[in-house]
Image 1 (tube, rainbow, N blue to C red):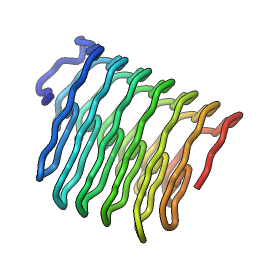
Image 2: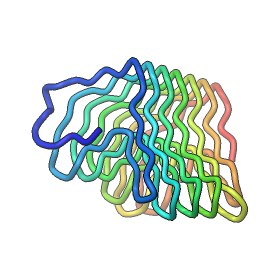
Image 3: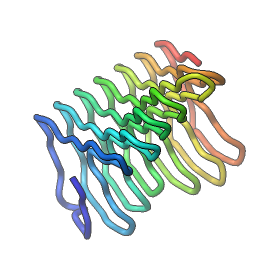
Length: 193
């Protein structure tokens, strides 16, 4: 599902299945550069599957603006080849993420994977998790539950009463690069890397 233009006042609710399978980069939901969308509420499944050497994104905000994401279902980005998997990918501005379901980035080949990825100079609001946020790498490749990329990336407060986990070589539950910011982390669940 590709979204373009100014849809900032439009909210989206998914109760079923939104999915894409491609040998090139694959998206469940894609918000492009300069575009705006409102809140996303997911009680179903949002899936992006890459079968080649590219990337699979569950939800991708590519230099756009996106409201809150509330997930009680499944958001997953997978790569079954040599690419990367992202549950939620952000290189723009995003509101809060409230998760009581599962957000998963999975790489079964030779690629890194991230549950939630916040790219360079990007912003995510608060992350509230009482579900699962998991990044699973494979072989010698890293998996991170939450990854905050370098160069002024910002995430608000993280509150976890569920599971945030990274699986794979050099994995991290929460990975905070240099010159990045997370307001606070409050944990009553499990953070594993």
